[in-house]
Length: 188
Image: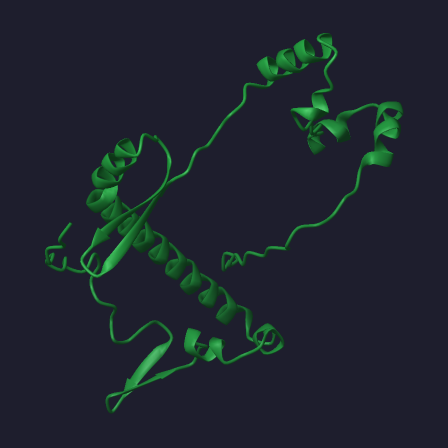
């Protein structure tokens, strides 16, 4: 498949103003009284922790905007690649007699690896019935399936104490990564 050059689209948003909030211009030189992302990149966590809270809030906003922009660009590129290679990849999979999986397509000096993963989903009640069937046949279900029993935390905390006491020895509590948001108070 030969690639044809595509015209570059116009920017999706207007260019940023040369003077940002919290900055001033003096003889063509922009000065700022806040921490920039470039300055943040040169810091370690302890140095960043000592920044004024309003600087941290502005930096969080900028990082959030960068993440949103990066996600938008990644989605755009994914859609472009699918538009370009989706049909040839589907045809190549059909030619190999498969519906899913990885195939390779040559495009000029590149080899495109197109992967369509298989995502199996199991109906839990039907799966339980199938396990009961093989147990009734005298088979060990552990030879065929793995079983994981989950307890939603909201249910556990609502249980009566005597029921919780039975399950507590099987429970381990760990913590995830802490998260923080900064919300500016209304100036009253």
